[in-house]
Length: 336
Ligand code: 10D
Ligand code: SF4
Image 1 (cartoon, protein in one colour):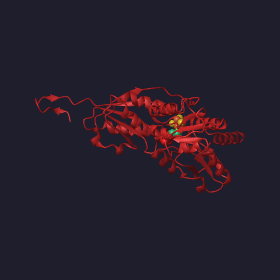
Image 2 (cartoon, rainbow, N blue to C red):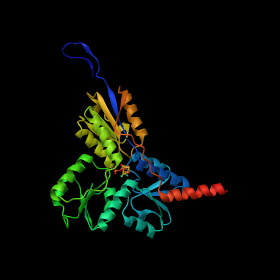
Image 3 (tube, rainbow, N blue to C red):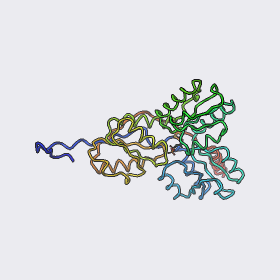
């Protein structure tokens, strides 16, 4: 690297090495709330506390909560009767609430309020007898949960390739909704294709792709063109994190990779790389990004520049079941 040039033998300066660090990145308000909900539930009720599915799609978060006494299960049927179960931030279908009631489970619903908003839209349009075209990734928990609100009214559209096959009952009563963590640009392509087929297609009352997904994509776009390599910290099953890799490449980054931990970075990726972009998905604690920055620092990438796309200040209050119990305990303690 750097040093001598072959033709003149002159010493040339090593190429500048720098890091562009995206802001915002990492935890969104819905993830922060869901992770704190599990931690508070463990404090309040004691271990074990059951969590249906990964509370958020991040390996490190899940491992850390497991160490504190959380037990992650795939279905409520695996939770012993009478126990406490927390529903993940991605949301659940109404049938899952019913199953939990039947098994006499105490539930804490950590569904992000912005996912709940999409559920409510689905319920409302189904009530008005619309066909709902839900843009999202097949098999993703959020899509399963939202579809479960009105299965007979919802058709999944997994990208522009699905549009030609979509069937509706009445072309004048069709609305599109979406998963919260999609690529903004790809979703617009899908919507454009749907509008070609169904000119009267109604749009959601407000953006379904949430502020956090949008801001993280805007930031990575801003750095993409300048970056030789973009490292996205996030887990493979994290939709919004995977999207950041695609958006980085789409914005002109020469190379982009998703890693859970700094140790997964391949030294070979740095070959000829002067500018490294770093960001992380909405389910990623910043300690993992700090690990990546340290790893890069040890290899000469010490100059870190922030690339800011937006300021975020949104927060959500804890799930209501938990707030109720925390309040009751505080009251009991005050009364002595
Ligand atoms: O896969 P994903 O992007 O939907 O989920 P992740 O847990 O990585 O990030 C938080 C997003 C949620 C809970 C969906 F709104
Ligand atoms: Fe909520 Fe958006 Fe975070 Fe999902 S990514 S948990 S919708 S704020």
